[in-house]
Amino acid sequence: MSRDIDALLKRLGLGAVNPGTWSGSHSWSDATDAPLMDVRNPADGTLLAQVRPASVADYEHVLSSAVEAAAAWRDVPAPKRGEAVRLLGEQLRRHKSDLGTLVSLENGKILAEGLGEVQEMIDIADFAVGQSRMLYGLTMHSERPRHRMAEQWHPLGVVGIISAFNFPVAVWSWNAFLGVVCGNACVWKPSHKTPLTALAVQRLVDPDRIRPYPARTRSRRNVHPVRALRTTA
Image (cartoon, rainbow, N blue to C red; front, side):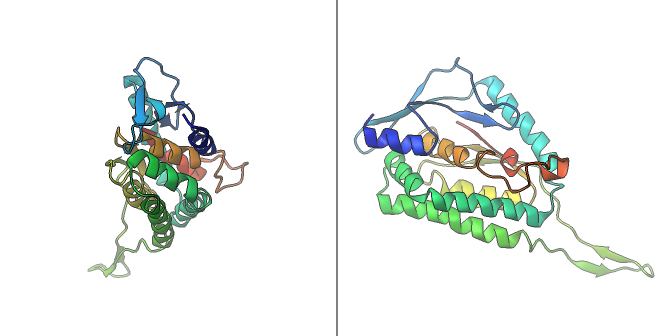
């Protein structure tokens, strides 16, 4: 591994060997039973890093914690959910160059397209922030006197997102950011050909880096947004 790639991975919270699963209940997996998976630059075959795929126990942790997160996240007011996504977008802005470079290295796109894909993530984050205050419903007249009916949309619960090799991070953000502002928990299964970019995004949205609520607030209503996002390679 070259020094430049090593430094890039380090800035994104990655290393030569990386756990491939994060869950709200167990954080990064410490399982070692699955064989390591080599991640190579498709342009020249250079080894970028290795990833430990998810175990059966990891999948159970991810899904069970997603169900728990969904039950709590749906109670957070939609504008507050939007504020959490805004902070995620700001984090992507700060690391756009590094993440876009990793997209290029792992996917084989030219650098301009790698950076453009991260910009799409930033753009959809901005869009989702606005949508969090526009989850409108209809109000309707009723046959009963002094009575009015109102329409309110409810979260689906746990949403699964499977992203492909050709758009390793943008497609996830299109679904995840809108899903999160609508009150859902999102489980991400990235392509096995591009796991590093997914793991880098999960590192960037780590709860220690993003805190939309004061540290003293730990109520059900103030569940951290990253608990509603989890990744499994």
